Image (cartoon, rainbow, N blue to C red):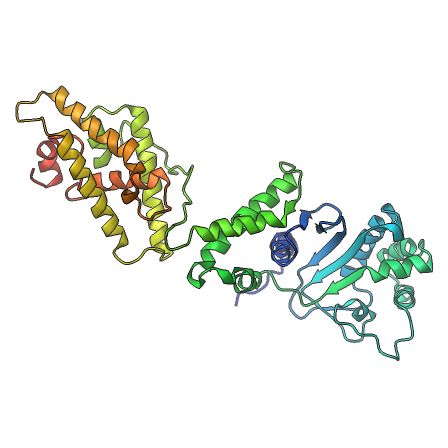
Length: 407
């Protein structure tokens, strides 16, 4: 086990707390009604607004294992100070606020904070009110910080104190940051095949983190609605059905960039042979990259049936050959180079623009993203030692020696 850092300048715990806010908020939103809206770092760490206008302010504390909350724990009283400010701002007892402290620590058995636990049951010996217990605890403190909170708390009447304290709930023993993925996968994601839950969670959290960043930077002004999360999870889960596959490389480009003039790969060479423009070669390189990476990701996540990719490529080769035979039918040994290039361009145009419309050339019925088919043709044209498809009618003859094949 890695040792905890003791560097006084380390911001690890603080950083973990910020990440915890987003992950716990997602976990909670998956359990709340879809009409709930969530904000982060607005009135508290996390704000939940229900469909009827009720607002719950949540303070989140990710503590070291074994920590306890006592009567004068600053985690509780600092949260109280925030809540007092919001309570007074929203007209006290007339407000629609509730307050929650989510903490991975446990409330000590002898602390009056047990009054705020969800499972607390008052017994006959508990004749003192929460207000009286809070006043006693605050009176015992010698802390200047607690003193300031005491002063602000005492600005309320006794009736307001009781009303305020009645709105507080402590959820101690809240899940630790590393436990939340498992809880989500075994809870809200139970409708998804077990083998696909890791991938769906990773993509859902990636989308969620992006929404949180947009919210915190002001790029997004509206809160995140629970229905959005449900729709996103449903959309992702649909990609893992038996007739579909996830598409995750739309818009992605190779990190090393694209060099249409000097790319030495056979599939690019083939396009130059028929006189394809640089812009179209650029698009072809993108399609190759996206299809190659996408297929690799499907393989890593074990989403493909054994032999499925081979069968798919065989279908592409068969359909290519049928169209090739038609396009090259009028050519012979004496055909001019211009005619050969025109035929090659017609064949490539079919693969580039028309093949994606043919249902039988989809790897699965609902996988309609064009780069999968286009890029797969380029992968076949790039195969070694011999390309499985080609565009120029004389390509194999001309480069057979270089590629180690015969026409």
